[in-house]
Image 1 (tube, rainbow, N blue to C red):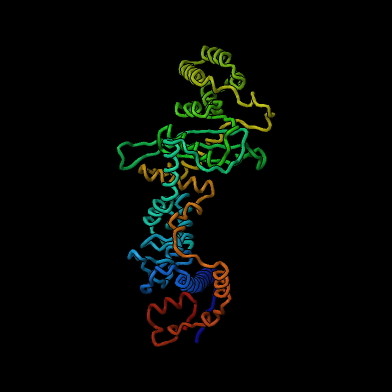
Image 2 (tube, rainbow, N blue to C red):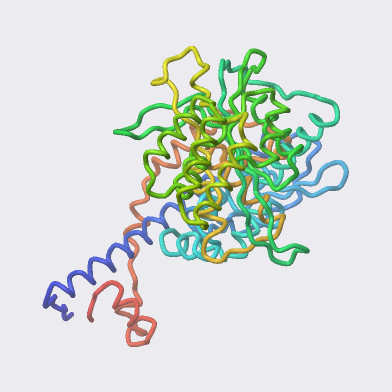
Length: 466
């Protein structure tokens, strides 16, 4: 037997990369064996503890898509008293009929699809994990995996609109909630119109400092949809009632002056606050380098002195070129139409200013929750696709993806297994000595077929020269 020599660092690097791949593949194969043994033993327990009206018909094998790769699992098929066939192991695993994908794979795929395009998600999965899902499969998962939880939310919203039925609440108390809303247009495909406005609302209790001049909102609640303003604000109310006891809560409602946001002020009975980001951006663009007038107008707006702010803007318009004067007059109209929201809400609060910050958190949330995933790179959507992706994005933001992936159907599996017995079964399977499995060799490397092309490929992977 002749041994090849490593001649330089480049060859060593290639060897180590190949070695990582071989070892990882071997470990994953070992893990799949363990997982298959566990699943088939759990299936045997299901037979033992199943209801007696379920008749065992036969065993049938199927490929399970798991985070460890594809696993060929043999499980029992049952028939109930109505003649319906069922695979109880599939049901306990939370799998859809004819789509044997584990919840772990669904979660990984949905998390990736919630952050990047479907094609890119499929590529990342195949390159970094043993999971091999095509991008249409990932797209279908996003469309179906959260359908039950989204449907439940729609039903609860309809009950709230029709009957005023409030959902069960966590009962959290908050003396003041800040609500902010904004919209962003997304391109449509295969629809009657070319654009759709996504409405996004957030509610939070305040801020906490996370670094030098860096803050984040506390206990943020998000809601997004492409419906009309009435149903949007009903959906926001549903989310907040699920979390809070709102009997003694005051509201500050921030927005950029859009009419649908002001309608929310009427519904909630709160104080309207013109978003400081939009206000300051409009003033800065109109006044340009006139910093003194800019600061003076901002101070008047903060105190709610609308007439004084308009007077300064009128004076500034008289001493600038016509084009800039036109912009200043537009800003004056903007201030007049939002006069009730100019005063800084902190002027009327008992708490010191240092405890509260100005509104404007909605801008960053629009970018992070919607724009980065759904607007960039020339993307276009169907209306249904927008709603599905929004529900996924909100689930990720609220850290409720795993909870919402579990279908209500999973709770209707007619079998209950003893937890202690399951844990004992897992421990025994994990402690089994698989040494003989690792002692397996590859006779093809030195056997009668050692010169064939496929064997040469195996040799290159293991870096053995015969």
